[in-house]
Image (cartoon, rainbow, N blue to C red; front, top):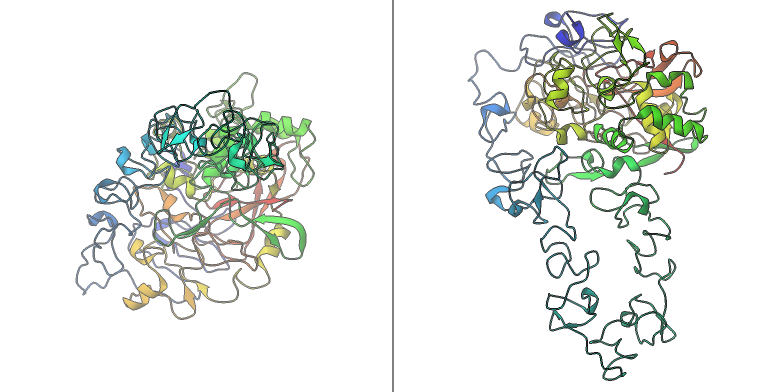
Length: 640
């Protein structure tokens, strides 16, 4: 029987392993065994050594709720009372189609959100695109049979849609194929072969005639199809004319033969962007991994859909103190960003790395020895003749092509000789891997279906990932894995990245969401007189430590909820790096960059601790194919 799948989250090999029923929670200088958060008898210890009380007094009144499922609003307050559902509660309830939007509330959903009808969407487009995510609000396009965006009529007019035919609505003559907009309707041009009326040239120019072609006479830019009038003559589009014209997607960039667009400029396809990443909202992403919404543009304070959420690109970087030329990711890599990488290479990580090596783009700073190629996946499902055949962690029976599957690399499956006997990567352990897979794939890997949606999973920090997959991702994204020295420099000289205080307050695995951030805050717990309230020198809001964070509330045995979406906690390093989101981190500091196999080299982990309670300041190491439920990664880049 596979102990990895049966027992789940557990401490590192070499640290003391204690059975779940009698485990204790750790201090910042050490680790702890994993424990099921449904337990109500396990003692907990916070980082300062004080011992909190149990959840409820045996002599006190029974609360109305202990978990969200007890309430019709799906919100159980720290006071044990059910909250009333609202449009700002950060939870999908009532008839909402997604968090705080859709349904009869008529608060319209943004692009990418779930919907049932077009009336749920700000774009007025609710469509299943066949990507496996079901009905979603879609961005406006020129083929969605809807008047939306800046279109003046259905799928025509405005800056991005085709021009409107005669008789359709317009706001200006450039909205019309005829070049004539009269009383807000496209009209047929008056062609008489003579320059007359307000025309600037024969049958063109002026407020009522079509725009003039290049070299024709003009008075202002709008007289010309190119929108450029210089010296009384219409000029051909140029990428230096400070006008969006020709096939440009934004001013002087995008389209064939033009410079590539910078971050946030309008794009249509990846090649329009300097980053080679045209995002879900048709804006150029900072890096190709952040083209997705969930996990690409959802990092920072506040949960997705919550009022006041302050999010930015998950590809944001900040310089590292004392290390010129190093731009370290502000956030750990999300599951959504890894999904973007794998979609771009169709799961064939091996072919990608081999192509990069042939082009001379694999450097000593991001080691990927050619002898490691047989250990890289070639597709999502894997397979193939002549591939390596080896057993798993707990079953020596050889599996042909065991390393060729993306699903094995990022799912609960554990390769041989894993440093941790129990990894917590199987959902049914209990445990989790935040790289979401369909129920069918989960079943094929002898695991349970995820308790949360792919949207939720993609916002979370990616874990249960090994060095090979992490380094390949960073190379594709234009960088490499961070080093231990870079991480430590970003952390600074203090005990915690944000300073000496406040101390992270661990809530322990025996509590429920009403005692954890963001359902609870320091202030709400103190106001309620909760036995789990942090004292004046503690906080549950600065670091995801020892079950101090849970979002959304747990379903079944899927521990995904304890893994933070990067940036949710308040703690930051001196230059703004979010370093305490609940996962220890792989680094590119390895022992043998040219080892014959990944098992013959070891990687060093960063010192930041984990949501389970691994101590802040402790570091560990493991071989390059090692996976662990509390281990993620981040990238460093040569450019901001």
